[in-house]
Every structure is written in C-alpha cells, then in structure tokens.
Image 1 (spheres, rainbow, N blue to C red):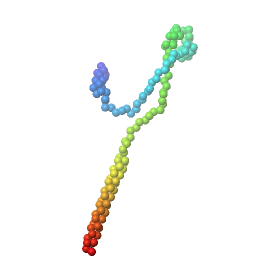
Image 2: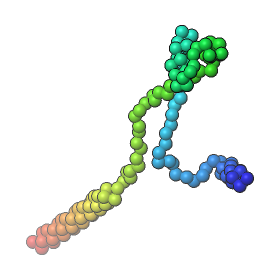
Image 3: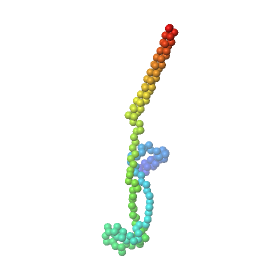
Length: 146
C-alpha cells in the first residue's frame, strides 16, 4: 500500500510540473527501433520434423502418433522469434567547452595589445603633430626677426 501511495504522489508531482523533474540527461541511453515482419512458421512440410527435433527430442518418449494437435493448431501455437540488430554502431556525445581559459587569456591579451598599440600610436602621432606645430611656429618667429 505504501508503494501505491508513493507512486500516486510521484504521478501527481509529475503532472503538476508538466513532466519536468529537473534531472540531467542520462549518461547512457539505448534506443531501439522496431520493425515487424511476420509469416506463418513452420510450413506444413517442416512442421513434423521441427516438432520431433525441437520438442520431442528433449522430452524423449514422444512420437508423432502421441501428438493430438492438428497441423493448424500446431501452426498457431508455435512461435519463432529472431531479433536482428539493425545497427551495431554507437555514437558517443561529449560536451567540451567552446571557450577555454587559455583561449580567453589569449583573446584578452590580443585585445589589450591592440588597444595599447593604437593608444601608443595615437600618442606618438600627437607628439609628432605638436612637434610640427612648434617647428612651424619657430620658423615663422625666425622669419619675422630676420
């Protein structure tokens, strides 16, 4: 009774949360695709032989005369199940960070280097412009004096 109560409470919880349990995806999962093909087994010609080898041999003391079922009853009471695996390959899905710490440091360093380089270039250009302005002013002052 306790198991039933627990399963009912769990079912109610699942319904209330729209089936979301907060669980992580499973590490291992097997998905089987099924297909069905069927035919009558065994054929009437094969039935007696199969009956004798697969059923009567392990029992012993069994002959075709002792079997009281008709051929049609035997056909409906035998089942042969063969399972084939369609694909024996498996796929491994792993998660890896796209942006590693080393790559982050590299990108930050590259960006800082670019900014520093541009900043230093701007400062050098500014100094050169100021030097040209001062040089032009000095030439004009010398020209006026002479």
